Length: 142
Length: 142
Length: 142
Length: 142
Image 1: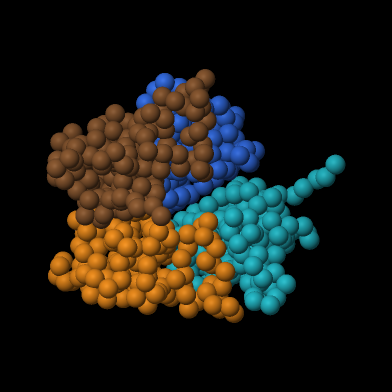
Image 2 (image 1 turned 90 degrees about the vertical axis):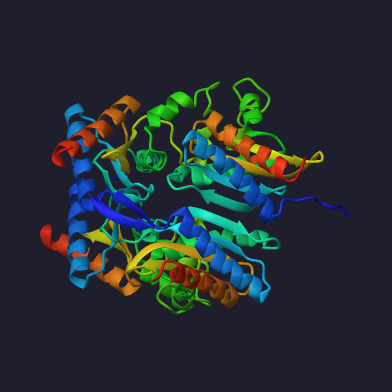
């Protein structure tokens, strides 16, 4: 039998809060999605002004990061023409996202979920996703 | 040019709070989705224990209720064998939901969004969706 | 070699005008889609207030009516439980519509396209679709 | 509650007229799609001779431009190999278009919808989309 650690809804809202705070600092209203370690959505927030297209993209980034246990920016590197994961972005009906802004959430070396952010530039999205994780880690004392 | 009223993220969280309170009362952890008047997701919460399948179903219920400006239970009635909307449930890639638990949110006679709840029985889902709306209306003094 | 008769964009707008006139008479803002004899969209109009969900449904009704050369209400009858076309509504990714409101357009015994209407009750939708065809037939003197 | 400005069907037809005029000038029959600020279709015209494949592509371009509030040609640049949005074209079931010809429509600094044109070369498509916007802006005196 396996025992799995997974983000709770309370955890998810802490992650969102951290990402939202950073989004407000840089002045870019974001879509923020939190998935569990199975890639299933736990919580989602479209800040007022977040993009319609990002509603889906943020979820796909979080799905990818938690499901594959790596940042979507790592896929961005590995999926370039000539690289080993080239073409992987059209997998899973296109849900596998290779655009920066999706990050897995690791606690004690275990992937417990993911966060996906979209509406800014990919570096801005990743910055806010990271801010969500940093905020969360501080809160839980890790 | 048209002028449209739309739920804000602040409004969305009030709706979620009302539905969550009712879900806690009846002891059924729910997936709760809030969409705007165009059917686009604003906020989503999967309470700890909410069903994986309901993650999508709650969103589809809210999409349908806000996009069609009617409760999904009304479709449930109209889409029975022999009734006029029979077969409509497979429309829009199956996203058109005819299962009770999706309700439009009307303010001053205008549809400003929707709420979709899933994980319990359809009547329980609808009860929680309605509780979200009642809580919201009281908060905004309507 | 085959020679095919097909609605022009000018014809399509006449069909839309006829359906829109009737929609205005009954006070229900509609989504109106016109497809050619291959089921491909020629023209679409969402009257102010037409439903978001009907944007897709109107197109599917017209696609079905022109592609199958029969009214979607005929499918509604044939697709009831126990009837020969039962379950056909989930075909073609759910695009095959069995809800009244889609009609083929026949000229000189040949199917030259279709019209699909959605946002009202199915009988209202079909009434407006028929009004589009009647208006068109009168215009072209058939 | 938010208050949103949105293109009306009357506005949509003005945009189409402007794009069609330019398409006639350059002698390329186009598919022209107009969406609202949420990416939902308002109006569509396939000029006689417009391409079948462009029926969908024009809609996707308009969806992307209005939903992301930027021209699809901007995505074309940002989604090249090695660039930050590389791979984004397979998002949202492939509906996110990175081919020139989709433009957002801004009025008083607010995105009120989008226009997507397809059937020519991408620069021709963008030229006609821009012509639609220019024609519209002149009509409404902006």
